[in-house]
Amino acid sequence: GAVVSQHPSRVICKSGTSVKIECRSLDFQATTMFWYRQFPKKSLMLMATSNEGSKATYEQGVEKDKFLINHASLTLSTLTVTSAHPEDSSFYICSATSGTSLYEQYFGPGTRLTVT
Amino acid sequence: AQSVTQLDSHVSVSEGTPVLLRCNYSSSYSPSLFWYVQHPNKGLQLLLKYTSAATLVKGINGFEAEFKKSETSFHLTKPSAHMSDAAEYFCVVSDNSNYQLIWGAGTKLIIKP
Image (cartoon, rainbow over all chains, first blue to last red):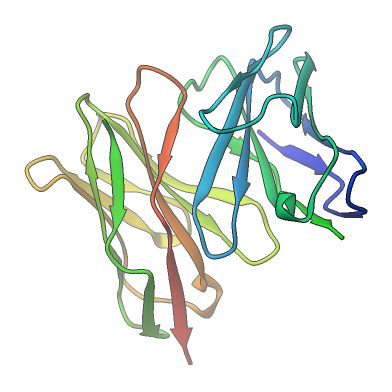
């Protein structure tokens, strides 16, 4: 149980285009989802927290107009990187919590974004 | 403010020998502590968690960790390393007042045959 999927696993896009990453909780309802960014040989950096049906809360320094987050249902959250630039290339990871396990996050496998 | 320090960026051990990955934390609250493992090209997996119950926590794959409040430590151990244990390990703290996890920088575990 507690499986989180991400799609796509890898994406290459051209500079200036937008790309959408999906995060789904497959066997539980995720009241809260999180989006992280992981730089090479570095730890995870929390980008934003989203609760179903409400606006995401972004961490300091994360541009909300560039990284659009939508949490439209209890099993799906999307991250759209708008007008992507090469510096947005990174590994993006989502996680989700259910109401029964408040502090335990279940992680997706991640999405490798490369902007050319 | 909370923080997590993983004392070693790399740890190299021979197969069959004990593993020790060190983690120190600081927290103003009673923390929850976690160890996650990240294998290459795979998602993060929870190894074990401490949430104010028993101080010695047993996890998956033979790993365990001991919460020592006096030392503000939560070191991860395994009696005998296996080649499949080679991965990146992250120590994480949560202050129990919100969902936010504070991540250590990670320790890369290398297993020598």
